[in-house]
Length: 147
Image 1 (cartoon, rainbow, N blue to C red):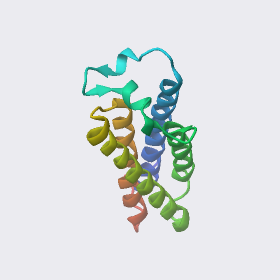
Image 2 (image 1 turned 120 degrees about the vertical axis):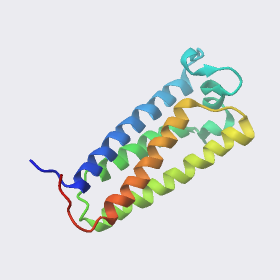
Image 3 (image 1 turned 90 degrees about the vertical axis):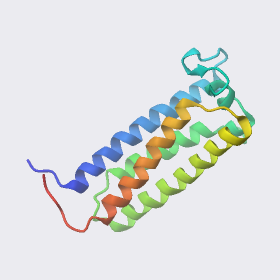
């Protein structure tokens, strides 16, 4: 069976959204965990606990990572909509670009304020950036190319 390029991109976006959900859920778990996370502490430069328990790790009582889980679930749902549904395809792009902007802002906070990085957060930044790029490519494809 031949699969259209836009369908393949939709599946790649779906996989990236699932990875984003898992990364964000792990960050939520670490946010509330009392013990340090040994797998994510690489000295002064990379320390997920320092980032994940900082004043910037929540908006009010809600952990930023929980917002990430909800956002990735929303993107996952949108990734399963056909590309020719232009309004929802455009919503996927706008949502992914907004999330990418917020993730870049959080990475700026890590770099310039906290002076420490979280590898889980950087993984999420990579996922959301790729989702945004692929959503734009998927939306812009005007003809169905098959492999």
